[in-house]
Image (tube, rainbow, N blue to C red; front, side, top):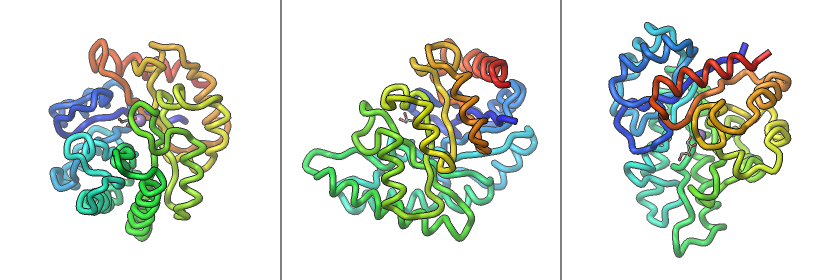
Length: 270
Ligand code: LER
Ligand code: MN
């Protein structure tokens, strides 16, 4: 059985592809009513939320929390593993480490998206990669004893220059050398960067810790030209046990996008 979740931001956010934003409880109820099994929470800072309140609320709605998104710490505060300022790098590492108890409590993976940063002017690419490797080693080491995994997301070239493709992500995993580091694959980014989406999914194998779906235009699956039937069949064929999480534009409105997505995806799985 494929498990479906959708991204919900616990607080106001600028990131456009968080389908739901605003009042937490009513959004959780809407998501559950649409037939989702879980909710991926985008949380800028775990200090802003109560872990018991979150688990009580989500459980009351019958929703699991498979993943915590952290990109708003970059989007709203500029925290990054690869900033030339060591204070900013330290703050980014501490922020990710501060997610570990919450992730352990909820049974969620921690997503490392844009908090890895971009290569800023004046910084050598090799230097940025070195900082990224060190930061991931430290965060993975802090997460490991609590049974928490980190999922690094290859992100398309228009958003970052650090780790755009699945192959680069797999190379980074090798270099970091942590048993609890995997990838978050996102169909929107893969459509831009991967020569063959199905082959990339296959190559990632058991290191696929989480999976984002959006269509080629970042609308809900079914609104663009991606072949989700083949993509989901590939995941199922590989024995993927993780989640398929909707991260797409709230268009024409959040409710319609979320509904159309899950109808489309459930219709095409065997
Ligand atoms: C986040 O999961 C993502 O896919 C990025 O596009 C964030 O900017
Ligand atoms: Mn994504």
